[in-house]
Length: 198
Image (cartoon, rainbow, N blue to C red; front, side):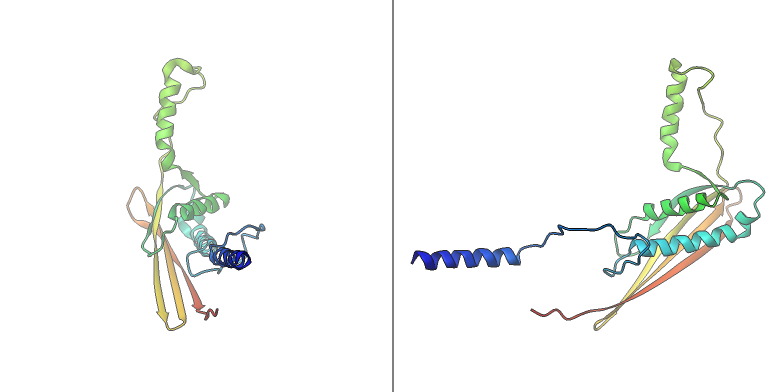
């Protein structure tokens, strides 16, 4: 009787363990440039393809290519009009870094404004040497504002699914309010469901 009970308890424990959630316990570093199509959501591959193409378009446009001085740009928001939770700040950060790496654009950090104001107050508090302190009135104004929108269309018929993304960026002249450059990048991915057997 004891043996039967022990076997029954062991079998239940084994079944409970094997049906429980699985943990990812072993990993490897991977090449970030390798295409990622693990699922049908927005991925880093989508971000890279969109950003690299849009940055290449922007730097070839006469607004930046033929500029006499270094155009100063302020990156603002990328609206997320998809049904997914997507970190649009990360996309715009990549846009800023890739544009800056071309050496053809300078940037103003909108997010640093409060930190700068706080530092001005500290430096003018008497704690900083007169010859090294900074103050308001010397900042460079932006020439352009860059923003945009991310849209998606999802279609699913039977076992087939198509996910379409369109990311649009605009660069607006701050003085005139005229859009000086605008372009979009389209990404379309197709997926097919697989039957999962027991």
